[in-house]
Amino acid sequence: MSEQPSTHSPDPDSVPAPEMPMPNDEITALRAERDRLQAQVLRAQADFQNLKRRTASDIDQALKRSLSTLFEQLFVALDNLELALATPEGRGDSAFAQGVRLTRDNLMRGLELSGVQRIAPTTMLDPMKQEAVATEPRDDVAPGTVLGVLREGYTYQGQVVRPAQVRVATRATPTAETR
Image (cartoon, rainbow, N blue to C red; front, side, top):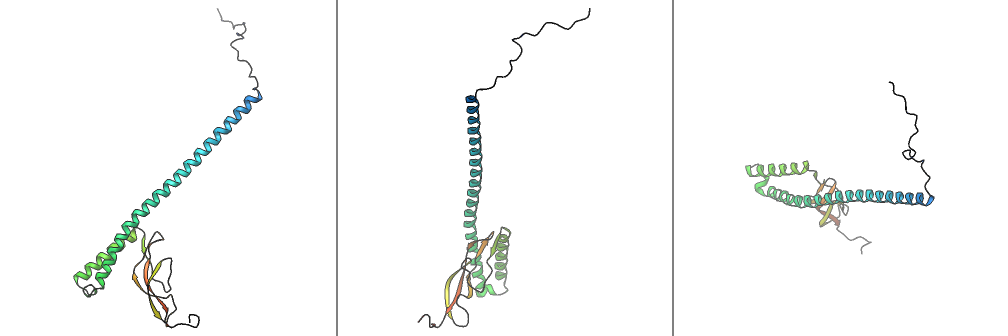
């Protein structure tokens, strides 16, 4: 006996009804809800980006503050080593002088590997990198000429962390303008 396809029609209750168009009020409400949710998502994304930026900046600032404190202490140690080398015992070729020079050079090399650079001497005062702490009246050079470095200055990643302290020339004799 062979099976014959069913000839009876499907139950009218089991057939999905054709979709009825939504009323305009409901469409408008759904669109408004969608727009509100999209705006919320955009605000949340913007808040998250701002938080990431602010957090990165805070971390960077905290790192710079802690490194600045460390560098200041190391700069004092370098200053003291320089002072030791300026003494009569430090100027010679004794084991003491060699040890102090070796210590100073190793300390400076470590700082350089960390991104610290000594501020190069300049001919004229650069107020962005140098601090004039002493003056000397001179007529043989222009006012503002750097005559000597009293304390080395340093930068870290291009930013001045300690300005160099320098002695600069001033005008020795009064000019017609200053009388």
